Image (cartoon, rainbow, N blue to C red; front, side):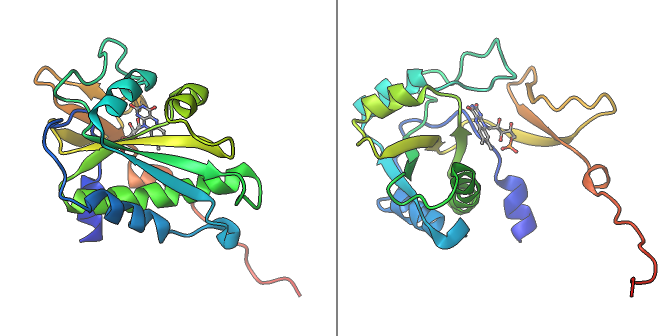
Length: 202
Ligand SMILES: Cc1cc2nc3c(=O)[nH]c(=O)nc-3n(C[C@H](O)[C@H](O)[C@H](O)COP(=O)(O)O)c2cc1C
């Protein structure tokens, strides 16, 4: 079950933009993020849910989509995200180095995206944006740093997992039908054998 859900939880970048979410769904997804592990249990991540059309319209051009598809300009109108969840670091709550919050962020967003996929909602983590511009647009207090933008919606594209080929190319691609293909390394390739250390030293 978890294996199937993890396989299905793919990055999606084209959405049924006008299809609304069930009321409360986005809050429930943030609740899954809230329950993730946290270094020092600092829980310094906070979230802003954005559904309002005008805010979405102004946020969209600040985000960079699919760097490996340079000829694809990103989702067109009608296929853009129906919502965004901004992942924020509340520096007033931060305890250790920022790298710790980045670990928390990975855990939190994976919880969120797994829960979303279970409901038929998919998304894209977007790390490529100019933080100051997003910060200004959303009138965030100084203490917040924008770490990641999650774009969300009901999917309007098919995504297929592939094996990384012999050439080692990990770039995703669109085929002639517009299907998105994502190469993943094979299990054998990522397993590093543990050494045999023989008798324990006395
Ligand atoms: C930390 C992080 C940042 C990412 N930033 C972007 C981004 O700025 N734009 C984008 O289109 N995709 C972004 N992605 C999505 C990746 O391209 C995607 O995860 C990768 O192609 C593998 O596809 P999968 O998520 O379906 O396994 C990001 C993913 C992660 C984990």
